[in-house]
Length: 248
Image (cartoon, rainbow, N blue to C red; front, side, top):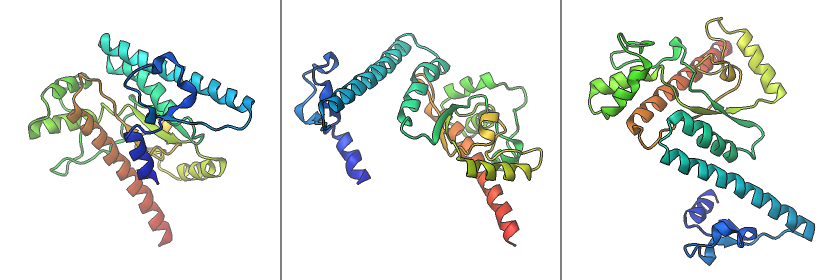
């Protein structure tokens, strides 16, 4: 069912609400009849409510598109794109799920215990000698074409983390269990994730998102995302190990 639904969207079949047929944004010869769908709502009041909601949603999305066009034309920074475009899009994407929330985490850092190891088995240092976070842009420009540049990117990525996570808003029972678990953790790692960044300390965050503008480097983004995911898996392994010890 999911595959069929995704295939329908990919083919642009019945993706446009019928209530928007007369909207000026959709008077385009490239919009074909098969793209429209019909919305059946019993009662005139119901139809009017649906149409009003659709128009409101479209206006919101139209505003995000306008901001993205302006951001591209003005060559805005990644931080500006995240604020004006990516955050509204992500919030919109999960708006139907009350248990989920988008959290910007560009300031979060990985705890030393969960930093991934280098190929030699050494822990990735918190910051390489004579380097700064701003050096990440110079590494990005190198295209990560050699082992040395890939290592430099991985090292810098410890301090240049991903941009967003999708966190779970635990219900009271789960939140109480998380609180009990954290009370028993060492004072050096009072968190359910791989970071002690406060918005993530007590809320599970299994979905990670790294953004890049058109001037960014995808290899660098993949390294940053890979480092964060590796650290998350390390934290999950440590939690599982605690459970296995209790079973014994």
